[in-house]
Image (cartoon, rainbow, N blue to C red):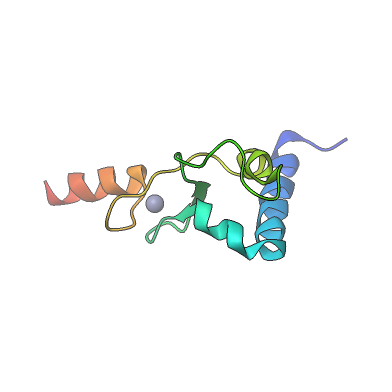
Amino acid sequence: MLGAVNLKIMINRDGNEYLTMYPKLRRWINQCVACQREGYKPEMPDDIYPGIAARNLRRYFDPMEVDKDGLCEQCRISTESLCG
Ligand SMILES: [Zn+2]
């Protein structure tokens, strides 16, 4: 049996392979410019072609927003605390 940690690594790898197979789905993926973390855009619709793509992206990735500078919320907060 696989442990939870191994399973998470496997899902991340599958997510990247999935995006390699369907590069157009990258438009629904945000990547933080600072920490390189990836997640799907919260505004992604429930169904996008081909059919189960949105469901798969939701399985492989967590929702993640980036700001206009391309920073995820965590990096934005740490940047603000550095500057503030
Ligand atoms: Zn980040």
